[in-house]
Length: 295
Length: 251
Image (tube, rainbow over all chains, first blue to last red; front, side, top):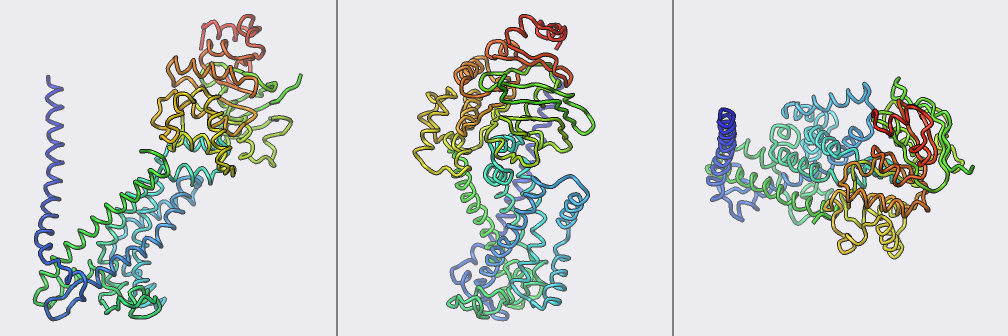
């Protein structure tokens, strides 16, 4: 009887904790969405921000955030994929590998402010790249790389060794075994990692304040020549992102509707992360199904 | 005698531990050979040495000479990828790739560059028939191989090996994770392909060894105790250890 009672108590405590987490999250999400969604309009999403007058939008910041996220993923994904494959499949157990692992762990616990200041000193000042999307994307790569590498390594490692033996025994080279058997199996885990990383990158402010800058220059959405300074695709223009914008209007915003803009921008940020999440999962699942023929 | 596989004075070390202590053993072309012995006697290690799967384990050193069809497979010139196409392997746990049945069976071929759809289709049907699983899966070739039962998975794994048309098939306790019916199907299947391949099977099941194999080798503590025609080894063992093992006095 006593054991059954213990069991019941334990299960209920766990249930309460789980419910608590859900309630807190729902409260937080609900609060942000309820106060923010009423301010979202097509005008708000597409027009430029105002520094002093009310009625400013977040069009440029929204575009900057998404562009920066894509750039960061384009830079960091191939690097972490390579590093993850090396660490999980090829790395011998020696001092060099353990140093690499330790470096990744240290890097992943680096505060984002430090990453931002490092990016500022190295890219913005030393390499004279100025406050630019490129500086921001590289800083975010530093920020994203350790987590993504770690995630890819773990996802690959989780594939049973039997699969590696099956591939090798069939006369597949090690590289083929890794890329054609192990990688497809690890794909769902890798996608989860990319999505989590993307959420962090999208919401990141501290690392960007000193690298991508705090000013949203007016950009001309009719001009898609990446070498033109007014083009949305230009890599060297300063680019305030959504998260930085929220931080800025809350700390020094002087427009009359600052709190409304901030609430609206926060809601948009959360919705975009959510959409990205869903989107990435749909793509990932269909890719996985295609690769593995699971229905 | 015309030997297809010859191993002379093979020693294998895991680090400092000697797992094979000078094995001299050879197998003629075609037919089923069983390797028996208690756990840890070195029979699986010996089997995995024949397609150099032990290379994957760090700190393994192998000495001695291993020749398959006259070629020294441990010479520095040997390409293990080519070797493993000639020497296929089936494992204890069924390990199909997480792809469709069709893709599992054609994987080795397609990686080798075969694109001809008709040839692939033929080979799939032929291999699955040889592996005695065709009738059960022919209607869902594009279903995931992971959705099959363990016994079916194992036969698909065997078909996957047969599809690349190896000379030698190594089976490492292929039925020990399966139920008796599935095991029986695999045994029957092996008997039907014994004339086409040189088959070496590691088994803990002495009845299985005596039922299907032409020759049997008995390993103990990393040494080859006795090898010969299965009937002779089982009915008239020449060493006391063999007699003790097959009559169940130890092991």
